[in-house]
Amino acid sequence: MREETPLKLKPLSAILFGSRWLQMPLYLGLIVAQAVYVYLFWVELTHLVQETPHLTEEKIMLIVLGLIDVVMISNLLIMVIVGGYETFVSRLGLAGHPDEPDWLSHVNANVLKVKLATAIIGISSIHLLKTFINAPNLDEKTLLWQVVIHMSFVLSAVGIAAIDRLMSHSIPAISKH
Image (cartoon, helix red, strand yellow):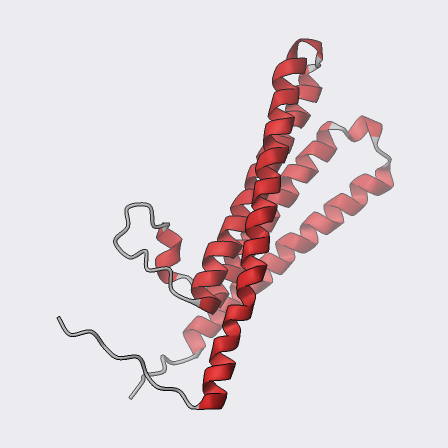
């Protein structure tokens, strides 16, 4: 099997194209943020286990929703780290790997935006559920604003998905010669 030689780029093109590697520290920083969320998860889980005999069902539910929230934010981080790197920096070379995520094989900037918007709605839903459980302790203004903010996330995601759908049907495939 013959290996292809890389295409030689003009100097300006090489600089512009190479600038994508400046995103590497950003993705590494998100990995550190992921580690912080893992730590936060274990702190909250330890608190739940140790304090369970002294907690009400409502408090347990709020802590569990907090754990779910941490997991969903962590999932969002993975989508941004892996999908963003694959889309904007370099291929990961995972084709055929048994642990390759299904969504990664067809990820692009638009797919990533829709997935991120959906994940944000899920995270917002968890926050809203926590708010409703804790509603007796909150004022109406706080409840109203959280619903308004959640609905703006939902409408934004629907808009992003609609634009993506329109663009994918209206832009003809560009062929490379």
